[in-house]
Amino acid sequence: MGCRSPRAADPLASWNEGPAKQAVVRFVSRVTQAGGPDYVAPAERIATFDNDGTLWSEKPVYFQLLFAIDRVKALAPKHPEWQEQQPFKACLEGDMKTVLSGGEQALLELVMATHAGITTEQFERVVTEWLATAKHPRLKRRYVELVYQPMLELLDYLRQNGFKTYIVSGGGIEFMRPFTERVYGIPPEQVIGSSIKVKHEVRNGTPVLVRLPEIDFIDDKAGKPVGIHKFIGRRPVFAAGNSDGDFQMLEWTTTGEGPRFGLIVHHTDSRREWAYDKESPVGKLDRALDEAPGRGWLVVDMKRDWKTIYPAAKRR
Amino acid sequence: MGCRSPRAADPLASWNEGPAKQAVVRFVSRVTQAGGPDYVAPAERIATFDNDGTLWSEKPVYFQLLFAIDRVKALAPKHPEWQEQQPFKACLEGDMKTVLSGGEQALLELVMATHAGITTEQFERVVTEWLATAKHPRLKRRYVELVYQPMLELLDYLRQNGFKTYIVSGGGIEFMRPFTERVYGIPPEQVIGSSIKVKHEVRNGTPVLVRLPEIDFIDDKAGKPVGIHKFIGRRPVFAAGNSDGDFQMLEWTTTGEGPRFGLIVHHTDSRREWAYDKESPVGKLDRALDEAPGRGWLVVDMKRDWKTIYPAAKRR
Image (tube, rainbow over all chains, first blue to last red; front, side, top):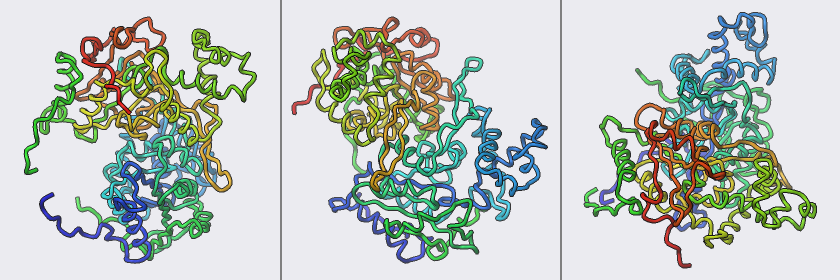
C-alpha cells in the first residue's frame, strides 16, 4: 500500500506463448477476480499435482525405485541370502530388466525390504543423504535437479494467486517429504502419497515411530480421490498429472461444480527429456489422453509448450 | 508499515491473570523472538489440539455419540430389527446406561450403522444439519456453542504468532470437518481424526466417494503421534489435550528437541462446566495428570484459570 509495485516479471517465463500458457493464465484470472462470476474464495483454491512425470522426470524408472535398488546394495552385506534371491539378485547385478519383469509383487518386496524396519527419523536421514549424493544414470545430475522449471513456475504462480499447492502422488509420502519444501515450496503437510504403516513405541523413555513392512495406503488411480478426501477434505479446483494413474484425480477435480482445471503433461520431447505415452510401462498415458479433449483437460505438449525443461544447474 | 498500530487488546482476555496464562505467553514470546535462543521458524510452528474436552465439552458423553443416537432414531423406520437389537434398542428408548454398558463394541456398531453407507457429500450434509438444529440435553444450546472461549482465544493467539493450528482427535474426521473452520478457524485440511474407509465409485459418469462400514484409522492414544506423522509429517512444538487419550501426543510433542509446550485442560468446574478426571469413563485423566509436573506440562485449572467457559450466546 502506498507505493506502486514495479511491473512484475512474467511468472511463467519458461512457458512458450501459446494456447497452453494462455489457458492457465485465463483460468487463474477468472477464479481470482473478486466479484466475477467464476470467483473462488482463497480457502477453496486447492491445487493438486502428481509428482513422477509431472513435477520431475520418471525415466528410466521412478526415481524411488532407483533409491530402493541403491538401498539393496547398501544393505546387502547384512543379507547374504539376497545374492541368490530375486528381485534382490537382479538389483545387485544392475539387471533392471529382470527387476521390472517381477511386476508389482517384486516392487512391493523391494519397498518392504528397503523402506521398513527403521524409525521415521532414520528413514528421513537415509532419503536426504541419497538425494544429496546419488546421480541420475544417464543425465548425471542429482534427482532434485531433474524437476521441471515450467512446473516450478506454475506452482509459484498458483501460490502467488492464493492457491494452496499439494502433491498427490503414487510415490511414497516419506520419500517425498524430505525434499518437497526446499525444491517445490510444498511443505510436508501438503504432501499426499502412498505409505506403509508405522508403529508407536517407547524406547528407553523416548517415543519413536517404527516403519512396518505393511502397506497402509496406495495413493494411485482411484486411490487419489480417496487420498485427497482423507488428507484435504475439499475437492481441488486445479489438478495436474501425466498418466492414467492421474485419471481419477483429474476426473474428481473437474467434475466438481464451478470453474475447474485439469492439466496433463504430455511427454513429447525425446531430445530434451523423453517421449512416451500409450505404450510406456512407466507413466502410461492412454485413456486420459484420449478423453482429455472431451473433458476439457489441457494437454501440455512438453516439446512445443516449454522453453526449458530443467532449471539451470546451480554452481556450488 | 508507516502507521503505528494501536495497542492490541488482550488476546487471552478470557484467561485469568496467573501462572497458566503467563506460561503460555512466555512460551510464545520465546519461540517467536527472532534471533533469540529459542526461536522457532514459522514453518515449524505446529500446534495440535485434541477436540472433545479440550476445545468443546464432552459430557454427558462425546457429542458424536449423541449424533449417532439421533441418527439411529432417524433411520429406525428403515430398520425394524433395531426395536429388539442392542445397542439400537437402548438408543431408541433413550437408555444411555445400556448403550454405554456395551463398551467399545457397541459404540463401533453404532458408528458403522449410522456413519457409513452414504457418500461423503451426503454425510457432510447430515452432520451440518444436525449441528444446526440439535441441542445439548442439559445445557439447551447447540453443540457448536459449547466450545471453550479461552481455547478459541488461544487458537487465535497462536495463529497470530505464526502457528498453524491442527485438531488431532479420536473423534471422526468427517464429523468435525463440517464445522471446524467456522467455529475454530481450523480448515478441513488441518483436521486429523479417526476414520472409516471410503471407496471411489463412478455412478452414471459422476465420481463419488462412498463411506464403508470398516475402520480405517483410530486417532487415539498411540494413534495420535501416528496420525500427526501421517498427516503433518512434522513434530508439533505445542500440544493441548485433556485426557489420557492425549498422553502419547503430549509425550511425542514435548520430547522433541528445542522448546516445546504441553498443555492439559483439567475439568475442575462442576458449576460452570463439569468436574472430572481419574474416575471418569469419558475423558479419563489419570496418568497424564500424575506425570504432568515431571514432564513440565501445564495443567490448566478450568475453575481457577478461565474467566468464562463458553462464548456469549449469539442473538440470531
